[in-house]
Each structure stands twice: as C-alpha cells, then as structure tokens.
Length: 244
Image (cartoon, rainbow, N blue to C red):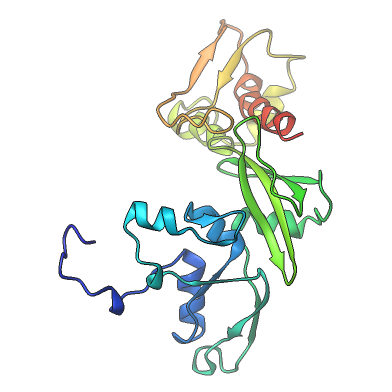
C-alpha cells in the first residue's frame, strides 16, 4: 500500500480478516474485531501472548492501529444492525473455518481430532490448553477460546483430495461421474504397488512445498481408479500419524 500510495494516512484505514469484514457489515460498521482462532492464522499474532506480535508487525510494516481487536471465540461481539435483518440479533461466537469444525464435532479433549473432506482435506487435533509445537511440521494454531480458557490445536492440510476426483472426471476424462470411482475402486483388492502423489496444487503437510507437482509411480496397464482415490487417503493418514 505504501509502495503505490506513499502519502496514505493510515489513521483513515482499518484492515482485518474475512470474518472482520463480515462482522463489520453485520454490525453496520460499529465493530472492528476478530477472534483468536482467525487471528492466529494471519501469522501476525503471537500464539503465546495472544496479542498482535510487535516484531512481526514491524517486519512487515503493518501499523498496529489498523488491525482488529482480538476477542474470545465464544463471547459477545455485538448485535446486527436492525436495518439489516429487521432486528438486533446477538453475535455471540466467531470461529475460523477448520476450528469451527473441530468445535462442532465435539473435540473437547486433547487428542480428539476431526478431518473434513472437500476440495482438500484438513485434519486438526485438539492439544489442550498448552501450546504444542509439532515435531513433524504440522501447524500450531488456536482452536478456540472462551473467557479464561484457550484451546490449542495442530493442523495438517492436504490441498488436493476431492479435487483429484474432479480432475479425473473433467481433466483426464477417465470417469463420467464422481460416483463411478467407488465401484471402480472396489473391483481390486489393493493398488498393486501403484502410488499417486496428489500434489496438483503443491504438497501440504508435512512438506509444505508449493512447487511440488502430482506424480504417478508404478503405473501399469491394469491400474484402477482406486489408486487415485487412495493418494489423498494416504496423505491424510500421514498427517494423522504425525499429529500423535
């Protein structure tokens, strides 16, 4: 911003995460805030002090005053603008996407985990109220917070899983519908040594290599769709094992 507008006055600018923008609009511009789970994913919040990290803000040249106030995930953020929905509705919780799934699946004790499947797979393990650093390159994050309690988590991400099936259908034209993969996979007992690395958009946990590309190993004439389905499943299993 300074590069293109060197004379900009940051006293007239505010910034935030997507939830900050949604909250700002829901409250009619009255509340500029985020929660700890979202703030922890900006790489600007100190996971130990739970505050915007002054050293990181200085490194990236971000004025602290433009950032939203960080509040508990479970807590009162404000009310909706009455002109928006016809009533002032209490806003009493904000979570990051994957942390919300962790909470909604009832992972209330350390060691409990959830894995959501979609375009990619995201596995998060609840690690309790003490910050845990992974020895296997999983991401440490805030799961959620409430007054006087902070729940941490470790996350492993596989960027391309469900999207692999879409690629088989729309890119390679090997199948006509996603449903066909189940029947095809059930035709064989195993992959017979064929492996698929699902790095169509880079490789996630634990390598975090955005320059990696997808690959097939051990292909032979009789290879089945099961091979491609298991690529994402194997990656997900690796993240699960490394979260323990």
